[in-house]
Image (cartoon, rainbow, N blue to C red):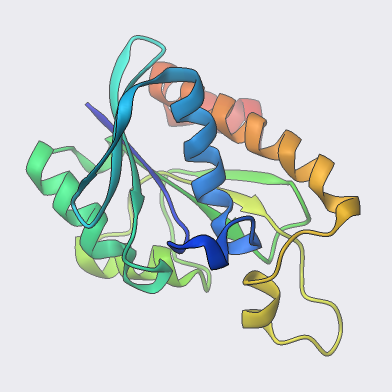
Length: 185
């Protein structure tokens, strides 16, 4: 079983924001590979899927970004998923817009959702796929920026990045983290 997690904030207020790009990738995966309707479980919404022949659980925590670890840990513990079979997808304001970066582990790099997951797991060695949302313009508060929406000029590029990120998650599920990093980094 693979556990694929898309980070974001619940509620209409946050739909389409930069911080919710993880939710957008999970929605793309669910559209392509999901079976059934989302269910409320593990302080999140889950959809069962099959990614390239691999059974997967798609999880979008509804705990708000900074508390994502509670949801992810509950699902991981319930299904006894090894850390290497958990993929966390999130935004990264330190990456250029729409750039993907896949890693087998590492620090949170300032991403509070990842930080909470690392804290809950007591380990930072699990795969993560970061999607660049660009840096805040001069004088902008980082929080306002990540909770803001993409501009009309950015939307097309971000939509392509969401599709590429979903493709990367499939490669990760089928062929592993190294192949995924080689192909998408």
